[in-house]
Length: 402
Image (cartoon, rainbow, N blue to C red; front, side, top):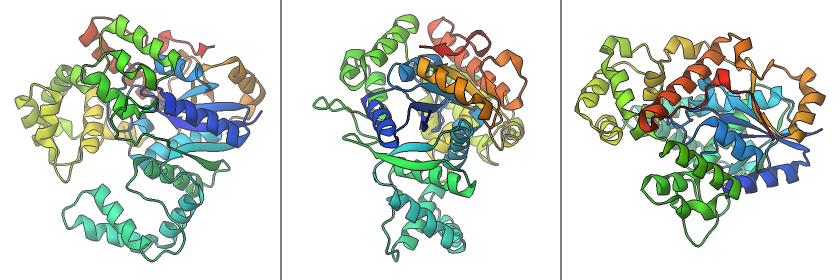
């Protein structure tokens, strides 16, 4: 059986994701689709809308055959680290291809971009340092350095101001640099851009637009046309049970406590907390009655919103620099769910997997897995704070079977 892999968050699973899955399977001639999915905290440093069990069910009901979890160490990392963990896991489960959505829509410009930056690595790094000294953020410096190199390039390259192009480039960079066998392919994004609001004249919307509509107080019916029926029913089920969807505002009282219970020196132990910001974090937490107020007080040219969110995610979960930096490569394949077709693939191929397959967490004490378990427990704490109800924990939940 041939497998194609996808890297996902499904926050939530929507019609654009359904299109991506169907196109990936069709264009790769794959028998199964394997999704490596972020757990309870996501790449932009925010809690997931609903727990990973609901999101796994959304995936399995809409064309994905196997869902494995991207460990916390990678799913909350910057783009390079996020991509490395994801693609290594898809290689480890035997995927012949990985397929990502992009604004570019064709693979050659990604390969050309990788070649351009690899060939001009020293010049690129020098330009980045040069732009950083002007006071702009590191991501902006990367972009400006790339654009300067790109001006004289005759081959078609990608627009690295587009968020899905950026992640796609890092997937390819990871596969090339690590000399993996898995082959890349890309599916063009259709209709909705990454940051676009929902449009009632369409059935495709970005996950960002869908979440914005939900959090601005509109009813779930406002987003029904943008998600498959199965996803909508699972969102309804979650809301009936917990009466809220998860975001940093619902976690704010606990996050604020987590910040203020530490001294400035203690805060610097947590992953991604760079020297000096700890004083600003404490000062802003004392003044802020909401997460948005807190973030607006500490955001600056040096510290982007996403960088700060990743920082406070680690403070909230209690993950230290030492714990995170000890996680260089994935050490296991955590199975979250499978269809009958996925189960057949596992039976046929699991002996060839490059990493141990874990279906029940009680059987292992892997330090990387313990971070995932901690993240689930802290997410569950936030859910309980806002709703008074509990979610299933890792020790209690076997893989979902459809």
